[in-house]
Structures are given as C-alpha cells and as structure tokens.
Image (cartoon, rainbow, N blue to C red; front, side):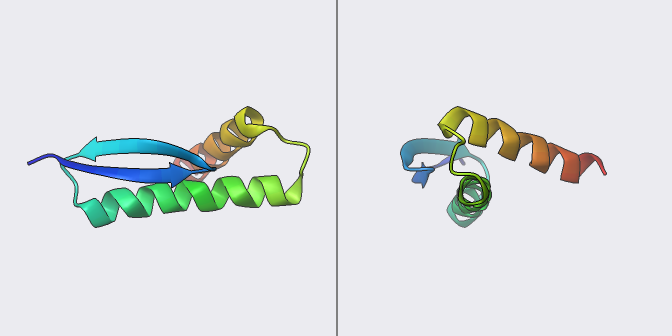
Length: 65
C-alpha cells in the first residue's frame, strides 16, 4: 500500500509517496529539514540550492563512512 504525505522542507511543500508508513515519511522530511536549517544557520550566505547540496553531501558522507 502506498502512503502519501505533504511535508515542508526548507519552507517548500512537497508530496512524498512511498510504501513506508506516514510517520516514517514525515521523519525523513523532518530530518532533512533540520539538517538544511543547521547549514543555513551556520552560514546565512547559502541560498536554498547550495544549502540543499551541502546537506545532501553531508548525509551521503555519513552513509558512506
């Protein structure tokens, strides 16, 4: 069964769809949103795109190490 949730990441709304529970999909979105906010808080000069790319790189680094 597919679940569909509306989430907000970095101020933008997205619809996530997956076989995972709604709670899990919300937790993914909250995790990413928190990490982006941390990046932006540490350097206010990052725009949305650079903050998202840096967040993706940090998360990828954590997964690969």
